[in-house]
Structures are given as structure tokens and as C-alpha cells.
Image 1 (cartoon, rainbow, N blue to C red):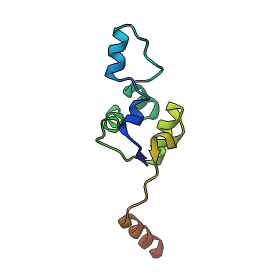
Image 2 (image 1 turned 90 degrees about the horizontal axis):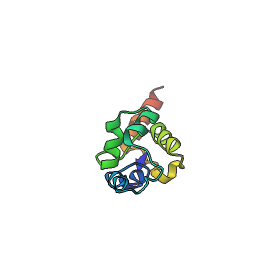
Image 3 (image 1 turned 60 degrees about the vertical axis):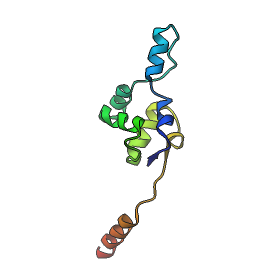
Image 4 (image 1 turned 120 degrees about the horizontal axis):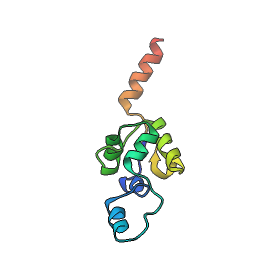
Amino acid sequence: MRLVSKEALRAFLITQKDIEAHRAGTPIPHKMTQRGLADRVGVHPSFINHLTSGRRRCLEPETATRIAEVLNVPVEVLFVPVAPSAKRQTTHRKTLQAA
């Protein structure tokens, strides 16, 4: 699966702007921290950070599903399917033909 955009995921997470607004007296909308999301999904916090910073966009479908479940949104809001590369398809076909 591929992340639609880093901004789409950031919308569900507490940002520095949220923290600054909270210090100024504005309540923080119902969001969670990157670490909180990572803990609930079962991945390392740096994995979530890489998604929100744009250093990483692709991930396993199971992880994408788990992130969407934890954030209580449909998977399609945050992720789109990615077609396997031609090399993967060729390798998969060779494996099937050999069996």
C-alpha cells in the first residue's frame, strides 16, 4: 500500500502547531502522538515518523489496515493499493511455473 500523502496522516496526529496552540490556551483536537500510534499499531516510532516526514510512502497492507483501524478511518482515506512491479510479477510467475 502507498500513503496518499504525508499531510493526510499528519491530520490525525498531534503536531508542533497543536502543542503551541495548546500552550496558548487552545484545546488540542482529538489526535494522538506518533509514539502512541506506533505503540497501538505495533511498529517502531521511527516508522511512523518516516511516513509523516515523507521519507517512506509504501508499507505492507496489514500495517496500513492496522493504522487505519487505530485512527478509526477507512483504509482508502490514507492509503492506495500499489501494483506489484513487473520484476515481482515475473519472479512470482516463475515460482508458480516451477511448482
